[in-house]
Amino acid sequence: MLYNSYFKNPKDVPLLLEKIEKYTEQTGPVRLMEICGTHTMAIARSGIRSILPDNVQLLSGPGCPVCVTPANMIDMILDLSQRPGVLITSYGDLLRVPGSAQGDCLLARRAGGGKVESVYSPMDALKIAEEHPETEVVFLGVGFETTAPGTAACILEAASRKLNNFSVLCLLKRTEPAIRSLIESDDFAVNGFLCPGHVAAIIGADGFSFLPDDYRLPGVVSGFEPGDLLYSILELIEMLAHGIPELKNEYTRLVRQSGNPAALALMEQVFCPAPSDWRGLGLIEDSGYAIREQYAPWDAVKKFSLAPAGEKEIPGCRCAQVIRGVLRPAECPLFKKLCSPDNPVGPCMVSGEGACAAAYQYE
Ligand code: SF4
Image 1: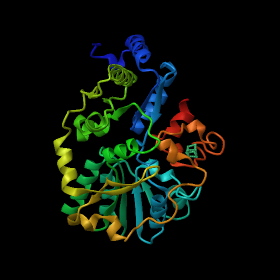
Image 2 (image 1 turned 60 degrees about the vertical axis):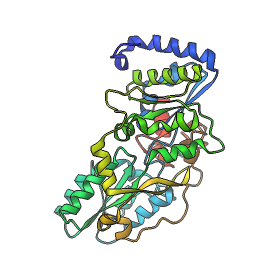
Image 3 (image 1 turned 180 degrees about the vertical axis):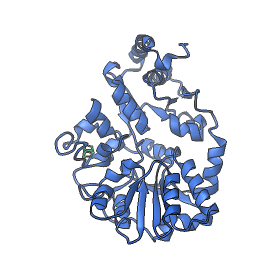
């Protein structure tokens, strides 16, 4: 239909917009949701919202892994960082996420003497553990299916090296149960989904076929260039106009229908589905990954007898509603007033994939 290079060819933009406009004459107002923090940032950075017709609304869903981790889980991590002999290692995003008390985050705990290190991968954390056998190194395994294979490989490596001073606090989450929970909630009002390209690269485009099959909602697995996003939006609106919801894969240069078998095998070997608590969505059956019993020595929950307690939300913060797409960041009374990237009240303003940070920076 369009050139192979449409995803980075600005001259195709007017053609895509013209088609979107034509189809929205048939559909009327359309609400589409992205469920990937990288999409959230790409949409805000490219200014796509500003060029779409007024009756096409783009909403951000629960696609930022740091944002969907509840405050009581962060509090639990903060407490762990104070235990003697423990070093917390984490991707940088999580270091500034506050627990239930404003300003209380891993960076603040480090300033107060807690041992906290930022790492680029779980293997970096493993290396630290190997070099410091006297220290209990805990890696915070946050993310969706995208980061799960790397975390699984790291646990297997720790097991093969018999590295007993290393463990993973598994906060990994599964996308499908969360999307189902969102769709089945009372305030759900979305007509179609931009499906996350990175997650689909692991689980396959077929991992989102439940959208048309079970809910008659269209979905398009999308890439991250502005052209990818515009073309995916066009495909969603075209399906809505024709009344034929399907699951389409726009990101074929990376995503296969059935995913990455090697990555899936790693995940299957190390993890099993488990209930998980989501900020904004609550406890959802099978929406997380637990480390299998066989690898219990590398499971920080078991090693340190961890259990979250206390408030799941930050007082005054509306991240729970932002994550469910029922509130735009600018509608939060604290947005750009008491809450900014320099002084974040909630995780959606901290994370490089958060909807509030994206809106603050670009919109
Ligand atoms: Fe939370 Fe700040 Fe976003 Fe409001 S603006 S929802 S307080 S992160």
